[in-house]
Image 1 (cartoon, rainbow, N blue to C red):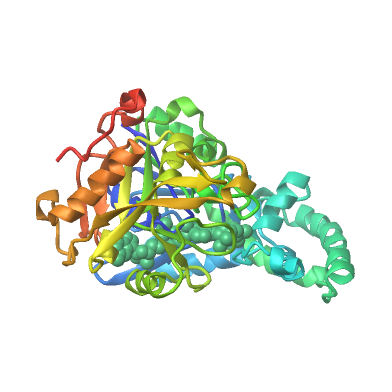
Image 2: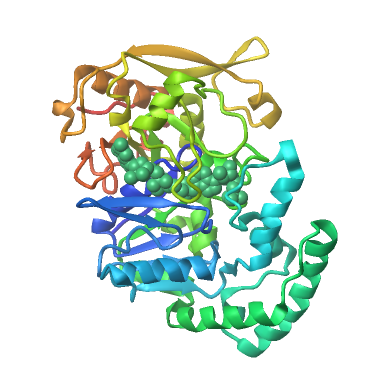
Amino acid sequence: MANVIVIGAQWGDEGKGKITDLLSASADVVVRYQGGVNAGHTIVVQNQTFKLHLIPSGILYPDTECIIGCGTVIDPQVLIGELDRLEQLNISTRNLLISENAHVTMPYHRLIDQASEERRGSYKIGTTKRGIGPTYADKSERTGIRVLDLMDSQGLRQQLQWTIAYKNVILEKLYNLPPLAPEQVIDQYLVYAERLRPHVVDTSLKIYDAIQKRRNILFEGAQGTLLDLDHGTYPYVTSSNPVAGGACVGAGVGPTMIDRVIGVAKAYTTRVGEGPFPTELDGELGEKLCDRGAEFGTTTGRQRRCGWFDAVIGRYAVRINGMDCLAITKLDVLDELAEINVCVAYEIDGLRCEDFPSNARRFARCRPIYKTLPGWQQSTVHCRSLEDLPQEALNYLKFLAELMKVPIAIVSLGASRDQTIIVEDPIHGPKRALLHANGKPASLEV
Ligand code: GDP
Ligand code: IMO
Ligand code: MG
């Protein structure tokens, strides 16, 4: 039995969907613990592509229970669309459970997200405009609508009459937008409620029962460490806690129940939206990575900004998440390059800095210090073991592991399940974050 958290170690889109799907083969329960339909997790199985926004990436396994935890925010329209699409493909969704305490994204959240981004002008965050920030803001302000509110038609009617009248003032007076018609929104959400009702339960209790029965639980993070509300590049972050610590709060389990934390990082770096990005590549090379990596957002279709691997961020992600091992994805995207840069440290105001600066203003002034490694200039997409990899690719991976003092347990060389090298068992292997606390470099252990 092992309870494992999978988190993004960069700015999201690291390939968490692929890795979660892969590890779900040995999971009994997969739990999404934060975020909403801003997430876009892609799974490719036998040339079929699945894009999931809220449903956990374990859904393709018929006997795996999939849970949307209380730390998430749920846009029912998008969730129902996802459920319908999966059912059309004969993927059963009967094992999907939704927390009563998750908050619900309403039409005014989406409108306010869009309008406030426009109003911010050059200070915009570059959000997905899916209403995520405003939904979490209402949760904190204690004016949110929860799934359990949706289930009580009489109560919901009263609650929404008041809330929509209040939000209409904001829409009309602050943003010059037409008001919402309360009855229309209420009727629509009551239809959503009936569609979702069979899935709604006390998910924390379900997870606790599963732990008691010694079943394997996988906690699937959305977004990434640098998008974390508390630990990311604020204010250019999302409004939840994607870091491993967020899994306990967002699923409703105690920290003593967690056995492993697996980080997922691309072999380079991408970012969507605004905010500092020290290793960003402008020009031809950035375009090349974007083309080869098909770096367009799963949710919004926006082009992702591309850059070199940043090991300062990597070390930070290892620390903040207590990471035991890493899955490195998209190594194949670097296949054609003659030389590859890795950011080993930053220069800030003329001084070398090895650690991620917690001060966002300092971070915005960071300049990358690179080490250049030779590329391998041959295809790796068919490699299935470390022995199959060109020596330069192996050296690149070893260099990353040593820089971040964390072992690489999985290497991904393509979007599909089989394009993967399992270096060592990421779930049952030793707890490396502790073993390497003495600072000794970890290795790939070929
Ligand atoms: P997530 O949000 O972390 O789940 O990542 P996304 O699904 O948004 O983006 C990752 C993209 O890379 C998806 O299109 C995946 O199908 C694709 N992908 C995942 N792993 C690999 C890999 O090793 N190589 C390549 N070329 N593509 C990959
Ligand atoms: P997955 O789970 C990449 C980014 C947005 C924006 C910031 C805030 O697929 O890795 P929000 O709509 O959350 O208020 O936007 O966060 N962002 C993501 N970037 N992958 C994601 O999810 C993201 N979810 C949000 O682009 O910069
Ligand atoms: Mg994504």
